[in-house]
Image (tube, rainbow, N blue to C red; front, top):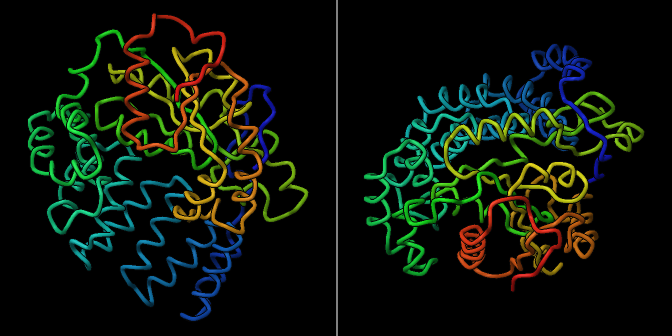
Length: 376
């Protein structure tokens, strides 16, 4: 993934997707049979052309509806950040496959992306009710949503009910903090911090725990970052390149200034400490001045490889350019070019969060230290 030039960029300089014409795919989709639609959808997906893949998938759903296809369509929409369309797809599918575990989970995740915390909390609770809990992820998400809704009584009940599951991953002090939330932390926590690091260093996992404690989390990958080519931007690379190698070389991953400042402004209005999570390098460096403190996660390259293989995301699965780039740049990304507290992240997530909380609780008010330092 090419790092963006540090010059400021505003996503509103040109309308996103203004030059994209899907008319030919839309017209073709209505003429294809089921097998042809499956092949066309798979091909466009393989090329990274998520919007065309949606068109073929929607036509396919008309002739061969299934829960698996509905989930796939919703995931396509999520990659395009068209969250309302994803919610519509899942709402329609849920009428046919009520209480489908994967569907409920995806509905909850997309409700969170759409900032509908009440709906997300209800869905996560339903996920927990209908089947055995695999890991702590749905529990943390439910706690975080309930906490943002101000339902501390339900948070306490949830932590108590799932204490055996949580104890399998976290120590007793972690469960206490999950139950008490921000009331157990110093009152002068910094208003806005950042957590940065290479792909696979564990930023998102750390964010899940901090969100459950009560921090406002800004996921830069879904709320800020875009691909950009000249003055056009999109969350989908193919929207800007059309698969053209020359256009690919001109396309960069960036944090547009207006999107960054808008996301931070919304987070600050939540009246609780906020943390922006995601990114590294020059994309991040021009924005750190607004942060009270920056944490940078780093792990050995072999750990990055294992985590990306397990995650198996489209952009960073083994064999992709993103996977190779993440491994290649890891040594360089270990020490950032901006002031930060460096945290070794090949440890249990609670240890990392404890270091973050301890540092934030003892920081003097003001800007980050001039020199990066190491915490083992």
